[in-house]
Length: 345
Length: 131
Image (cartoon, rainbow over all chains, first blue to last red):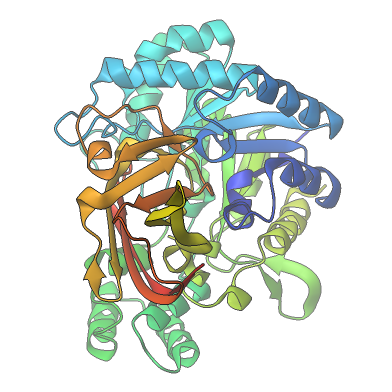
């Protein structure tokens, strides 16, 4: 068995947005061009036509196409949108749980085994758990940068340990985790840094970005580095949030996965840009994220679920003309070449 | 997200009824990676050739239905009419006279409310050809 490979159709969002690909063509791409990938993940509100009432015809078409290409419906991503009822009415837990139940029923009809949640509180999930158990769908908390694994009550992004406690206390088999590889940050992504320089109106953004990354990688003192950046490029990194996101090192270590090992049901293979490894034509890497160690640990703990590609580099290349936009199809193909190599298929 | 591309050239034109021009329309695509209910639209502001389109003249058409723009901002607007990812939302401006054919400089501001980030405002400024 071992680790399986899949794709979140989020990766092809730009193709879809511009009307160049539909979910049917995306399924075909995954089934035919990724050398053995079998998993599909979607965002309900991005893929399902006429959401939340797609109609029986869609469900039949979806299940037919999935069977046709031999694909497995792995995870459906949902959002609570607690502000949907306007600003003066933040949805309470019961209201959010009802929405979660609605999504569970849709997921069941499409054959999904997992629901991914991000902003839902434990109390909300608890209210939807009886239905999840009845339908046999797991609700998995995504662990997304800058949240981490080894964090608990009162700590920033620290829901993970609280959920672990809840799972172990109740013994539920339908609440778990969905780590996103974005938490295993190695350094800044050159593509992101170039975007910041470009959108700040800087000339020679490519060179300046390379200079930034060189300084970043050479620096051992965060304070000094921050001061250098603010002094050298005050127009570019004037937003504390950008600085925080770019300077923060990994929010989790690969070994941390062992803490939640029995409850990992799916992973996001987040990536921003796949580049050729110098001197190794046809082999690719994601320079800003650690993939080797997390995959090694997942193998050690006997993880047999999916890592779904979640390509997110397109958004920071949309400030230029159409001719400079990312090639999502190629990026995902490269990502699977890398995953295949690291998994050791 | 998709800021530079949210205002489409497709379908920008005057609209007619009973042989008379009564307004014009343009199409928007959502500034996000998924669909949102129409009630999560916080702002659509359009400036054409330096003049802001009055909100009370704006109507939003979605899947064969039409709503006054100001209605979708109200607290009791239904929460299950979804403006889906990649789908056009048509804004009709009922100004009683249409728009002159040709190129107009447009500045569109679109604000949408999301679940876990602050309301994101996208601005798209470009020349649009009205047919």
